[in-house]
Length: 316
Image 1 (cartoon, helix red, strand yellow):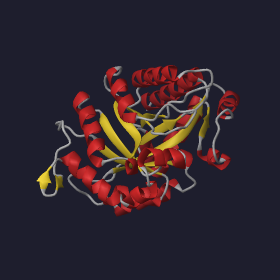
Image 2: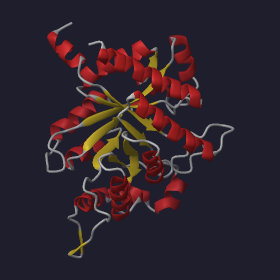
Image 3: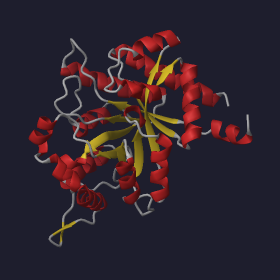
Image 4: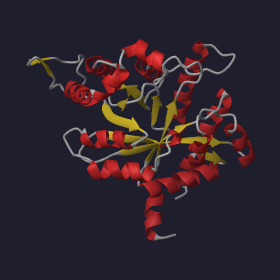
């Protein structure tokens, strides 16, 4: 092993959970959100650094329509794990309301709240129109919406030259990230000095290229002085490769070609591949997406990965 590889191999690898809050057949929504809380509590105990939840609308198999509401509950049943939206779909909303949601969360759970922002509709066209009207028009207005939101988070927003505050104003505002699967989101994250999360698990774009676009274009500011990245990867882990492949085979992906980038295998295999991606992407933070349609198998997968990664670090 080279000196560079040795140096990188002992760097801490921060793992987070990206939970879409699956509503499995024969289960009720009440059970789905209870399982979300259980996953967050267990993830915290296993050493995961963050729990993020997604936003989707009128999707039969998901119970994740309001991250801001669910995160309030997750914060109450955990102690230290960071709480994030992955992502609030900003074109749907007033920036004042988004800032108020996350300022209140940041006041409830100081130092733990992260605001991930996205540009996708999060549902079918009729659900999107019912939620916020002309979604495509809102997307074209996103630069102005972003600027307003960031000003509100920093207490510098004015409406008709009158200061307006998204109260309560917490001592430590939420950390801001931009999520995406293509070049535009990377450019937005760089332009507005936010962190950047690349959704590798659902993108056909090359991860290195998207991270490079963000890093090379990043504009330092008081908000963030240097680029910061996370990569969201699909991961399915079991004690044997055969069982992991069986569990992964239950997952329904829109495009089977995307499965090629997923991490499927035994704990040691996945820990090794994550360490390899850490070096390849120069990225120390990963969000793991594990949509196995079985709650216990999903928990088991997350636990095995955490134990393998932590064991690998401890042995160095």
